[in-house]
Length: 372
Image 1 (cartoon, rainbow, N blue to C red):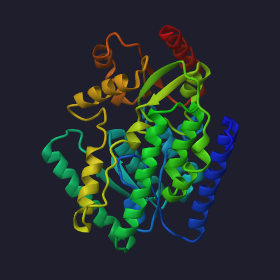
Image 2: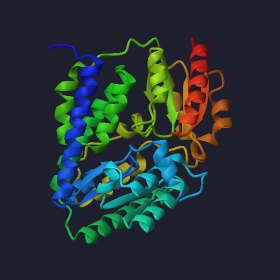
Image 3: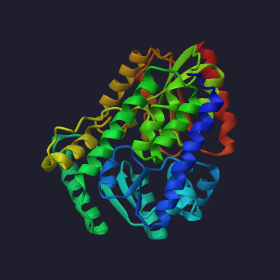
Image 4: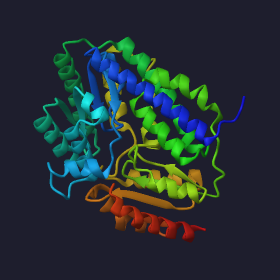
């Protein structure tokens, strides 16, 4: 069995991605429903149980989309939220095919963005707020609202939830999550391949992706990494690759402790022994208990988890990539510096514009020289 080159892998991923996009186009032609989520916390398998094709949108993160979105919200809105609005405005790619959105609200800017999507583009949004304060009562509040959300989706679609279909889908997603965790923690594929695979995971049918991962991708070439850097902070969009590109040029392996990285694949549980009666309750609990976000209060668990992965991966430093105008991570700057005193730490405040690329490159190159 021959070893694939980086170019072989990227071509194979692009080919598979194109096939999944074609499948999505066929769904629209057949007038079957398609739903989108933006957060990794909502179990997409529930939507498959309603015979809806679900995707997680992490693409379209470009300055062009951001500029379009800025016409609908304040200029100091989160770049990701602006890019989402911009893509819906121009009906680009996946955004033109969405019939409704599961709006899991993890911050105030995302809440406002979802409200604008519903008003401006007449796309139904089913919101559910995940409480920032993690207590037994807030957990129960979320679970109760999760049940209400499922009922509302069923009424909207006029369909019952097929639990067998849900279980099949969930099992494949859990197996794929195991693969990605191994890829992220135990190996060192070139960052471009890693990011392309994560983007593929966001839109693919899990059963098709499972077979793809277990055939073509068994022979991924590995980066001969000299150093490791733990990446925390905001999600990395499909096109947001400048940071990983710079690290790859210096033979540095990124450890992505992000919602588009380890956080999206860690914490999945086996639901095979859960009864149908308790299944939705269990999925709500799993959703609430997945890796805590920086907005949670108290967020000491987030810091502890970062520290654990720093030790577990033997990373040589930390880069916190936050989005401009996003307060969730940038306001933690002082606490990060205090908690990780003595650990090389770089806090990047970035957007998607070309104007920030030179600054990012300079700061990352300087940081790389420091950890050498």
